[in-house]
Image (cartoon, rainbow, N blue to C red; front, top):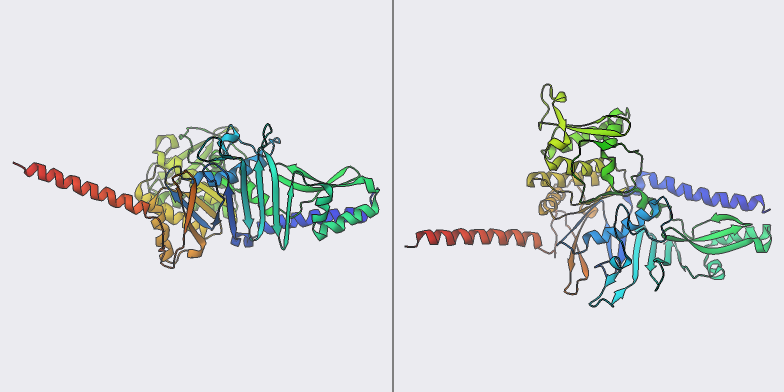
Length: 468
């Protein structure tokens, strides 16, 4: 039996990990610097690294790699959330649906030129992990290597790392733990090895057959960031007359739209001031977008919830009774509601990924939505929006010029594809007036060209009418 000293050492290590989790919950985490890198995934052949600021806008032409970039993170999220061990990656899940690894790995000019290595990097204020996935011939996709770095520690391990190699790379804090274990137990009863834990590799110290899993570098923040990420997909479903009830908590596995009705109801019945503010902010946002003045959730039974919205834009006498089912109003409400509820539900430091939040919105509402995204970004939430709306971008620039948000808290990333089909990313640096320097003028060029074509068509029509 190994000594109490070893048990205490293990307990202290595990408590340190839980302490890291508590630290992540504090508002200070909202000021973290987050960098994401992706390579070898679909059109992103060469690794692309971008900063996630409190407001990150991903723009560019269709099929330029915007969705693919964030899908890399969503693959990890759905792998960690799976109710079973799906292997290194759950390919076909609620956030990303792939049926073959051939749909994952980047391709070259020919079918045979396939880079069967997919790499994703997550760096949170210098605590970084780089995971490489590969698919050996005739085998399933697996974690080929993982590099972890934090506070001066920089360690790379792979699925083939031997016990001796692992021991030589253990941080000093774990060297001490291993030494204590060997001093207190029979030598053959202490084993050090690398094993896969979902989409990660971990160093494992086994004492007398009792597993004590201690990561080479504490990755609590990285795991929690992935699990806590809120994903609002571009396809949010048609408005329904009844929505299934769902449990609501601090995390939202899968895609977010299925939680909306139950969340609204939970906020309505809650006595917590924060939840009352969420309902108030939600209704004000809906009104600012010109959609409705009120949304209400009514449980029909233990399994279903009905969503009702105000029929008018502003509250009127007796208006509390003038509510209609969300299926009886325009698509704009049902498609925008998940976006607004996700923002209201998020905590500082939490990532909210919005695919095309402007869907089915009038241009005036798109401008107002830009202001709403800025508002929540200033609260410490990491809002990542993939958008085709030039009005949202212009609205964000305007808020920077108004000093509503610091330009250093905003990132604009423009995605494009080369002639060979590979993704390239350009990042705009905004000044204090919200202006950017060398930035593709795609949106403005299209608008200007459309105006020119219209004027030319009008001129030609007038000439034809005046011709004898």
